[in-house]
Amino acid sequence: MAKIKTVYTCQNCGSQSPKWVGRCTNCGEWNTYVEEAVVKETKSPLSSRTASGAKPQKLTEVSAEQIQRIDCHNKELNRVLGGGLVPGSLVLVGGEPGIGKSTLVLQVALDLKSKRILYVSGEESIQQIKIRANRLKRENDNCYFLSETSLENILTHCEHLEPEVLIIDSIQTVSTAYIESSPGSVSQIRECTNGILKFSKERQIPAILIGHITKEGSLAGPKVLEHMVDTVLQFEGENQYLYRILRSIKNRFGSTSELGIFEMNNEGMREVSNPSELLINKDHEGLSGTAISGAIEGNRPLMIEIQSLVSTAAYGTPQRSSTGFDLRRLNMLLAVLEKRAGFKLASKDVFLNIAGGLKVDDPAIDLAVITAILSSNFDLAVDNKLCFTGEVGLSGEIRAVNRLEQRIAEAEKLGMQKIFIPKAGKGLDRSKFKIQIEPVDRVEDFFKKLFRK
Image (cartoon, rainbow, N blue to C red; front, side, top):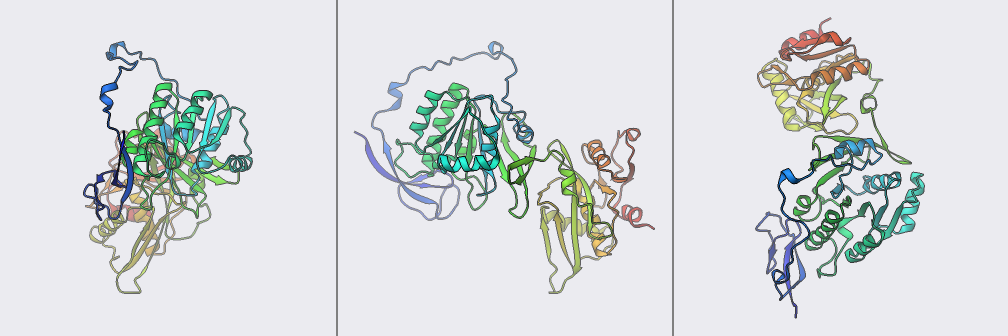
């Protein structure tokens, strides 16, 4: 007979303890231990093991045929996934509440008319999903919906329906009867994901799981959840902006540097094929503190607008604030301007913002950042037909950046007349560009060329 006992499980990392402790000895988090009832089987599972249908193979015996990916009929999602859904893969989509995870996945399910889809919702009823589908103005007779939270019932319906794509919203609401703990606990999430993973791999059915995130911004549940799935997608965006960014944190079948951009409207998520035109404000002519930079996100070139405000510190200690840009890198650039170029900014408040709610880590936007800062400091407007790309080093040199030709081509496509690039860039064929290219190598020389009359 099974012996029932109670253990305390950390909701952050999954480690267990026979008694409650305030701080987890494994991950160091406080107040994360929750009491859970578990069942310990008296019979060893090793005694009844049987060989599965799979057998060891040499790589020379494995077929090298290209796996046919499933087209999601969504260019931005296909870009992030690496070309589409891979059969038998598990995709985990995470994001804050209300960011649009369920809307995006439902939109994909209704657009994928060539495949039989089972959409399982543990949070909404079928009637609520119908209301959302009516708002999206989409229909798909090949998509079946199920409101269920039991893993056993979900897998039974999957065996009868034999779907070609499985969608579960969300994995935190699914539970199994074999674990005597509440849905959303570490053991339930781990066991349910493992059951879906096994079913998906055996039947070669791609599964999309929607996951919640914690208040710290990480995916809820044990860290092993991210290790079990094949792809982890993070849905980001500010509630004040209409733009949503889909990033790939982990992808076994594609690049992790890609990102997709969507715009939230009344009919769901609209794909933004050319985000540069939307991220740049064309009406800032004559205004100081703005500069346009050529950035690269994944394999996609973007023209983004850098905004800065520099003013005299009114409360003694100068403030440094940055939105969408690393604050430590901003402090480094201000130190370079102070030490290498002689601009006195130590007593000034400096506020920096990347327009559109984007978060950019590309060091090539350094040149545009210092341009916007000094433009605001001296109240001198920068022509909105100028573009900047280049990394600023600690000695004041402007270092070379990668994919320079892509950045120049994107600037030329948007009608820019002149672009400042690092002089260190070699192998650039200027003859195929109509835009004026201005190479610079030092910060002080760059500002002489920029602000000369």
